[in-house]
Image (cartoon, rainbow, N blue to C red; front, side, top):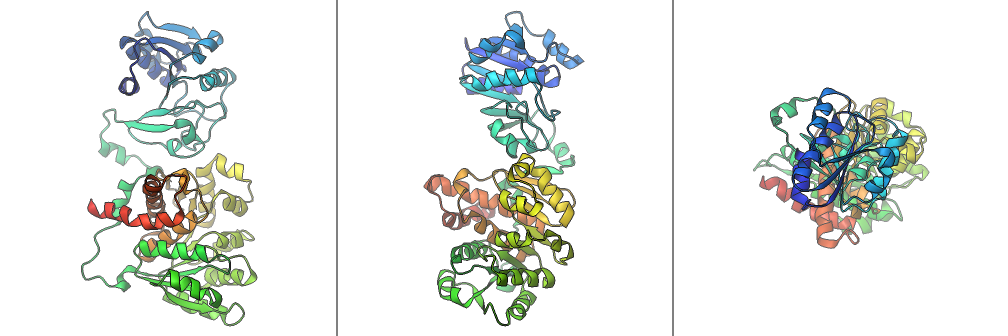
Length: 471
């Protein structure tokens, strides 16, 4: 009923050629209900039985309630009807679907995808998409809208499935929110509302020491910008003290761009390890990567940190490329570790190819987390954040305008800032991802997806924190 109501809110259905693709299970049963309600509202409805007659009591009941003006056809002769639809509703497979689409269903869904329908709506989930993983058969239904009930599922936010789902609309069907919250949510989506409780009001008499000290081992000649963006994002994230350890040659550039920081300047040949160890002993969290480069001295910095850190560590960018030579080094680290790979870095860390990483992003992140006991942030549209106990968060903020070099540096700085302020690593990770995406959404609104820059994200962070403080 909710799907039909949604369609009626969206468009005038009277006289429109409306095709409902129905499976034989409960999802098909929902399709029969939609058909009856749209026909009642004046639509010209055809039901296509993609898998033959309904099976199961509820589906049969809904089938029998359909009125005689609804045309019912099997998939075999339905190609022309499907291609000519003005409204298309997909009710073939629901949350139970796994694997590849069977031939007849794949053919019918392909006709639907080839049609020029004005409005395309999926019930629960586009057919061909796996609920728990977001994996999708290439012939999955391409929806403008997916109407689901009670709560977002992983596949509504995880790609490639989310690309087939279009915009997901959550309709409540009378299940109390308190009951929904009691369900075990190993995989849950994250929006800005979920982040608010993590940011209590600051103490009126707080001083800089109360808000943590972050050590950043970032930047190299030719890649000062990555260090600067991460540093500025960390400061906007609220850290009390920021210490940047950079090579002498970088000091004039970085000091001018980040006047709030204090500096440790190192010589890449002499006394490097001792300086890093001293800086680490003062830190509440440490970020390594962001333009560090992969020169032999950078590898020595990473080794020193992995061996000596006792505070939470965030490993990004070049730290991950250096780590990929031998990821098992993570097993000996005595501090909590968060890694923030994009799909290419994750492929190097796991010796998979990028396509395999992207085909099941949740499983990839969960496996890495389980093996190395590190919080894993697998970046990309619908960023996946996994922690060793098995909980997963899928981000719902952000936009394609953020696909630019430098966005990851902003995220790493923000995440490390929260960790330094004492936020538990998993929460710091998903909160940073969500806030980073929310800043991207607000910046894209101001500057366009085409033109928004990572530096714009940093300048937009205060707007997001204002919203969080206003609650």
